[in-house]
Length: 135
Image (cartoon, rainbow, N blue to C red; front, side, top):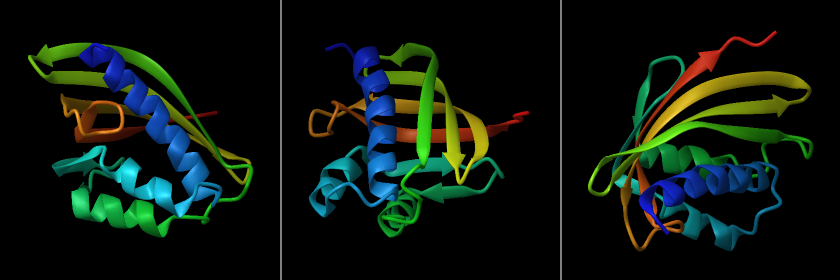
């Protein structure tokens, strides 16, 4: 599989895991494999412009198990993807969430590098999320 295909699959599959984990349906054993997708030096810029690193991201994901209602959903729409280096890909996607009937959306740009030990063959290196105003 090529780098772009791996990065797209990672975005889709990680968000599917988040739904299962956040609603409490994912098994505890799935967490360790999923967390391998985040590089040790990963940084995330949240929609409010705060920046967090891999340790905070892992703590946030780990503690969120079962915190969302059963009807929680995330829908990912891939917007663009391109290779920006030998082993580096950029994926831009929109993430739509529904929590207790309330809809939110954000546009994200994510940088990935190849890593054969990661679930989809790539790891998240940087993620930036920006709110999209919804009606």
